[in-house]
Length: 125
Image (cartoon, rainbow, N blue to C red; front, side):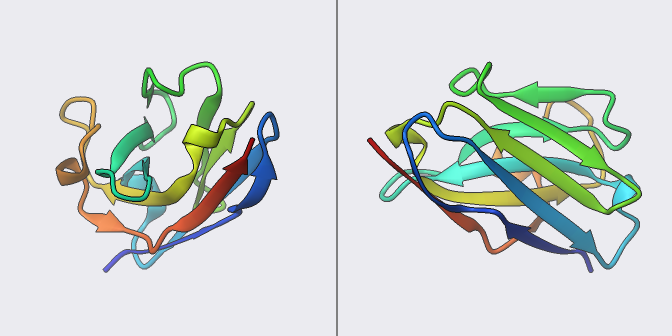
């Protein structure tokens, strides 16, 4: 079983930055494609970014491209999502997710097998 624990959320002002972390345990971290999703109140879970097992491939949603960046360190069993120039519409719960294969760009919740509990990001304008 794979456990994912997110951290780094908080309440910030528009224009600020945050770094979200997701630490993975239970299975070899390097086996997994990692992704970040977010969910605003009353809305569906939305893809933000994904990164391949060795970090060589990344995918970022058009809605956050240029502001969000994903990276990972397999030695630390951790994936990060860097949120820059935050906007009020970025408010929501951010979830980390894992899947063991990158057959095509994984950008839907059903593409992922394991999930963390989420971390809240609130952006005030």
